[in-house]
Length: 405
Ligand SMILES: [Zn+2]
Image (cartoon, rainbow, N blue to C red; front, side, top):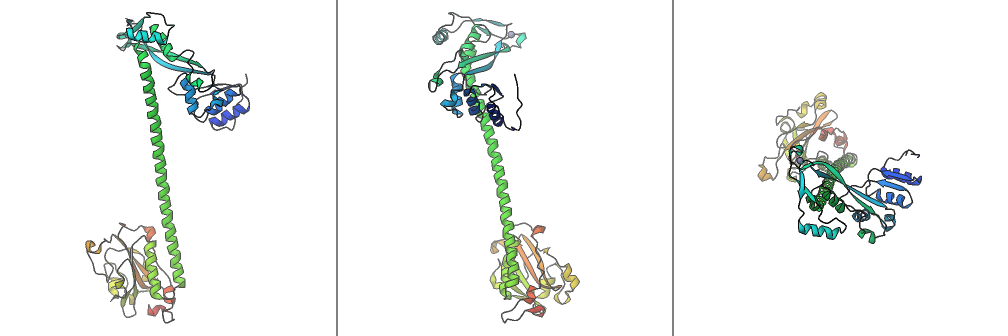
């Protein structure tokens, strides 16, 4: 006999297809499943001898029906020849087993089912002894069911076995191998095995669902991050476009405060600008009451106060400006009166203070707040460093220039 090796066939179905293509005379399959059942039956129908194992709780014609449920139509079922069921049963302890009387009602029922059975057959039971540790069982024996398929559906599904599992167990009982109770337990045992199989498949289904749900959550989280990044990119792009195209300072400031809120994942921002007379003014707000726009403050109150020491405007040297960077800010923006969260309707949870630098001098300040996040992460920081503010044209068509900022 020649056993050709199968190459480059990673899966069982692929290997099986290869074996069928080669017109193999004998094909052994470790275990059948829904995918391989049609292939195996097709090979059998084509003349190959296919020997395969199928894990199930059925025997006899029920196996043909099970194969049909797995997708094998009448044409494929023509490839089915023998279905041999194997079931292991614990045997009676030979040391303590003894003859017992079969229940009369049970005996007449068994003779109705199996007319060939010898009349008044003996049955046994075992009470337990030291040899079997009191279990009454010692060792095991295999019971078979032999089914030869020689009909087509639907008759195939009703065809009796050549030797049924029930009859085999009955004969084992009469031979003193198994107790008569096992006859009664046979069906209950089948039900129990069915139950265990269902539980196992339910667990597998649950695990699969759990993995799917986890993957879905990961995908959704990744998608949210992607959306947020896209929004930030769009906002940054809009800021760049605003800086290039805006010709009106208030419009520019208004748009910047709005976009900064998006970029920083904040919900409030306020933009101060330095005035030549050592005062500071609120140029734009987002999330705050727009009535604060135009508020005039002492420059020190904005740029040097609040425990966040920074250089006053007149002393804003290039070196000091170079050191200026975004920093955490705890408190209310200068010029906006404190209000209790219950009155304000929100609580300022995280703040960030970002100096605006033009030509190495601090010319403004942006303060952003989040009422939802506990803190900003380093990646959220955004420092504006542009000369665009000074070059921007005012309503009168003249550039604002550094001195006017
Ligand atoms: Zn015993």
